[in-house]
Figure 1 (tube, rainbow, N blue to C red):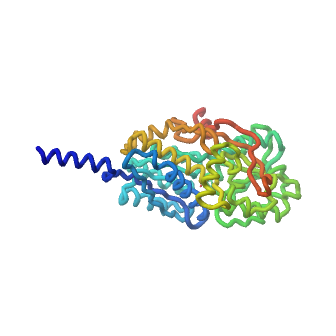
Figure 2 (cartoon, protein in one colour):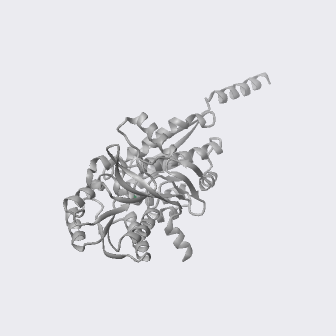
Figure 3 (tube, rainbow, N blue to C red):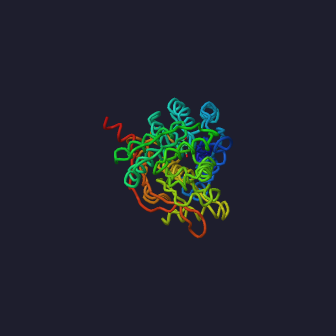
Amino acid sequence: MRLLKTVVFAAFALAASGAFAQTIKIGFITSYSGLNGNLGPYMERAVRLYIKQHEKELPPGVKIELLTRDDTGPNPDKARQLAQELVVRDKVDLLAGVIFTPNAMAIAPIATEAKVPFVIMNAGTAVITTRSPYIARTSFTLWQSSYPLGQWASRKYKTAYTLVSDFGPGHDSEDAFTKAFGEGGGRILGSVRVPLQNPDWAAYMQRVKDARPDCLMVFIPAGKTATAVMKNFGDLGLDKAGIKLIGPGDITTDEELPNMGDIALGVTTMFHYSAAAERPANRAFVAAWKKEYGTNETPNFLSAGSWDGTAMIFEAIKAQKGKLDPEKTMEIFKRYKNADSPRGPISIDPETRDIVQNEYLREVRKVGGQLANVELETFPSVKDPWKELQKKK
Ligand code: PHB
């Protein structure tokens, strides 16, 4: 009896000291090489910064382990293999990350089969969340930005040309913009889908210039591709021909603005996140980022999606006192709300597990001598319009 008491006491003491620490493993897949290979760290840094700032809020003894993996860009086979290994061998509690739609689509069936909640922190094709009940998305959809963009553009311009990367989010951006622009009375003069990697920009830009639209709507997968678009738009003289460049905010991604030069001035975009936003929560986020990673570093929309995704994961861990049950985790994700995210108020739509957020009409301007996406107008609480349209069908 004495021995039993001693053992029980020792067990309590160990538990209290955290020796029975519970480790939550997050399998984090993003791109550290290949197309957009420079963007993976914008996601990982946001996750790590959130963990650093908030880890003291975790239940006693609970730790988070981030297992980072490189999917090497748009590469669904690699993404599938990494997710499989993380689930089977590393026994992760959650999957997260992912820049590219094809990779997210490849991971979806693994999340379903293994019952591992999968937090999408970037990939933006509308259909993704329908591919597994274990997916919740804290980033955006292309419909969310391109549909209100089309509505706004139809009030300002008579004719448009669309140019998009030929894969899921590009098709969504084209469809959403075309629908809204047409509904508003605008006319599309031409639509072109270009290869995801190394398209012949000069040839495409010349074609657009020859069509003489009032505006050119572009979607490309952010990163260095955005700067290539901007350069070719200027080099081929589309600005001088009086054509306005517009698009979802992927085309003026915050971290590339310093590389774009003055050709980006006046470019109008619709998006959910700008590093230049004046909201106190964003100012605090940007200040914390600069303190952690250097004064010349700026978070971008991939950082915002990853920051909020980590906050949502924290809520699930705290509510379950560190013992994650996949069904309960998904229920918590579905109810997730934050009135004060760096991008403004956000919530997860329980029906679709997709994010509801403001879209901001922005223009590239100089602020303190630096190019910035200045928010001009707010389209509040936008639900993914593609899913809203599906419901009506
Ligand atoms: C995607 O593949 O879903 C994607 C990639 C880059 C972006 C937006 C969406 O900027």
